[in-house]
Length: 220
Image (cartoon, rainbow, N blue to C red; front, side):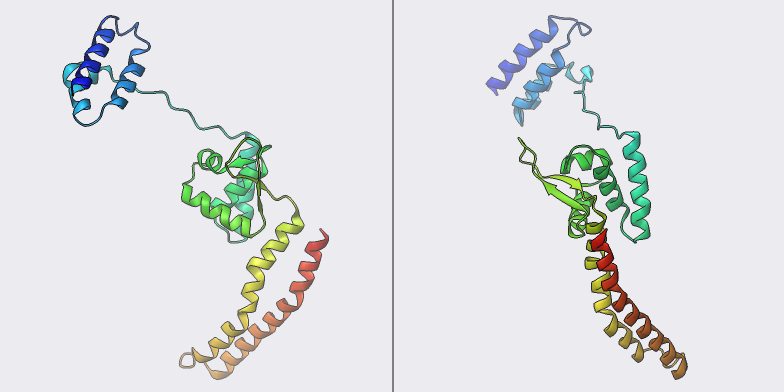
């Protein structure tokens, strides 16, 4: 408490010696002093300097970096493209910003520029990396992870077919068969049989053409 009282008294004399309009450094001195005090010390500072609340100062904040017009248009473009693939909007925003940035971006860059939560960016990067749409790259002089967009259509298409389409088709046969045990009370047996057989036909077709799509993607 003695240390707090002495520090508060010293600051009070310094602030009182200049007018408020002339004192450019006083707010920063007060902030520094307040940071050094805690508990009883902070309360002593307020008691010894009654006009402290009336100063009503605040430290300047760093504004978020603005997106360029090219980046904004790119983000909008990829948000629409990802929506066609039934992928979340945040994935399109993250990929769009990385695609339209000249330099690799860190995790914090994505959070601040897109104004997304850290959770959304973290999950978005995880999904995009699993699809092969985002690369983790080193940056000299930085320990942070930095990311770039994968711009090879072959890798993008291959990743989507491998991680999204192929697993769905592999489990499709059992899903279709599970339909045989439902709907018998609401629909005729012949109707259900026809519809299930049609699904099996579609499933066999897509299983046959999937390797063709993968081969085409490898040639892009």
